[in-house]
Image (cartoon, rainbow, N blue to C red; front, top):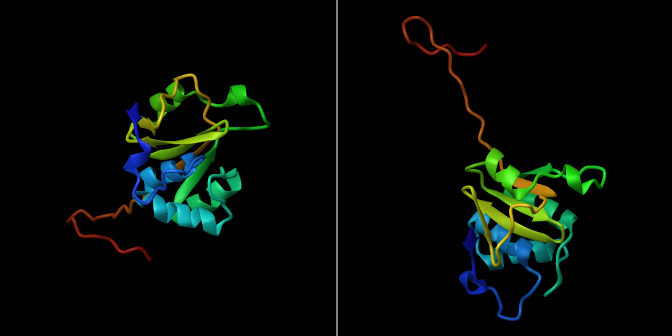
Amino acid sequence: MKIIKASDFIGRPADESNDCAVKAFSIISGKTWAEINNMFVAVGRKPRKGVSIYMCDAIAKKLGLERVAQYQNRKAWLCKTLKQFKDEYKQASAVLIKNRHAFAYDSGEPCDFAPIGNSTRIRVAYFKKAMETVVYETNAKGQYLLPL
């Protein structure tokens, strides 16, 4: 687990709090804290206040992240634990949301300001969308065939 400090984020005021989602989206997107915070402010975030899942959905859509909901019918025990998530998505980059907290999962390693246990239940995950691969067909001579 990678521990991050609040001072690691460019443009973050010292008195800011409840900004775990802003930090997580900042790490995964590669944008500064201030840029991501401005995006959250545009969808309704107030200073030193948390964000709703609807705000996270809007920001994820703007950043091109794909939402994978783990939380179904309000049954928390159906959600994957962090350990199960690590086993399934070894080298993924995602923003993970547990109950009332968000953190980054970058290249198979959780990133947060405090340690997170392996038994933590993941409610929602926002993944970077995989680029579609194009497969070209060739004939016996190795020439590309054009689709009609």
